[in-house]
Every structure is written in structure tokens, then in C-alpha cells.
Length: 189
Figure 1 (cartoon, rainbow, N blue to C red):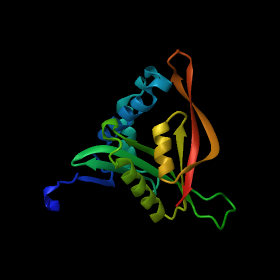
Figure 2: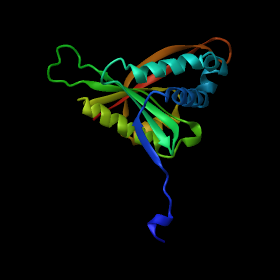
Figure 3: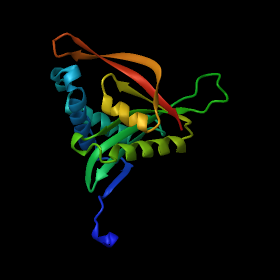
Figure 4: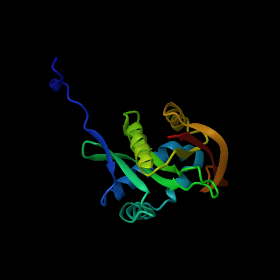
């Protein structure tokens, strides 16, 4: 059968533009609830003010904190289904022979759109943006128990480097203070 008779998905990644912030916030909150709702408890995630999340994404898109801060969005046709954001990590002081790296601050895909290649396209675009800014490495943080993200990052060539951090995240399922434990992953670019 001729190839023109097999329609392909209209998928793409582009820089975020003003007007994307509400869709980005919706994807982020939906993805977080799906990934962390059991770990943190619904109460912790329900305390997030969606209007504040939208405003923070609006600011990140319209007035990024640095020229090398990027917000990228994944589209399925005209619909925003995922996003990523990256920022520079300066080289350590007295490290004249090291170039800066970058941190993947966020990469989320709407749960109904996961496993469709959007995450891979976002990660590739994020790496391209960091390389264009002179970065030679990428780091990101992964929550304990996020097996889907661990599999995704491992297949993309990232690995844990041993660094761990704990973040207080509000009341957990039992009412006690919930703590989100994260491990740093990275790769050379």
C-alpha cells in the first residue's frame, strides 16, 4: 500500500510561547497526581494552587531567569501533551577546563499520552538546546519509586550518580509530614 495511505501522527516539539502556560500546568498537575498521588497522598498535591502554577509557567516563558533557560512543549496535532524545561548549571569555580552543564528541571507528559514518543522527543530537544548553549552534561532528579521515569532515563543513557536529596512535601496519606526522596541522574552530552 502506498505510504500516503498510511496517515502518520502529527507530533512535534517546539519552544513554549505565551498562552501555553495553562496547558503546561494542567499536564504537570495531572502527571504529578498520577505518578506521586499514592506516595505523597492526595492532600499534598491538592494543596497546590493551579493559578500559582500557571503564573510561574507564564513567567518562565515570558521572562526566563536566564537566556539559557528553555521551556519546550510536545504537541499531538494542535494539543499540548507534554513539556520539558532545562536550565544551565555553571562550571564549578576554579574549573577552567570544564564547560557548564545543564539540569533537566521538568519533563512531564500527560498520562494518556505517555509511551507515544513525546518524552523522547522532549528529551532530545532539551539536550539539543543545552548543547547549543555549550553544556557538556545533563543532570536531573528522580523520585524514589518512579519506576517509569527510571526506565525512561536508563534507556536514554542516563544513570544515577549517588547523590540523594529529601524534600518535605506536606502532609502524607497518614497525616504525617511526607518526604519525597530523590536521586540525581546524569549523562555526558
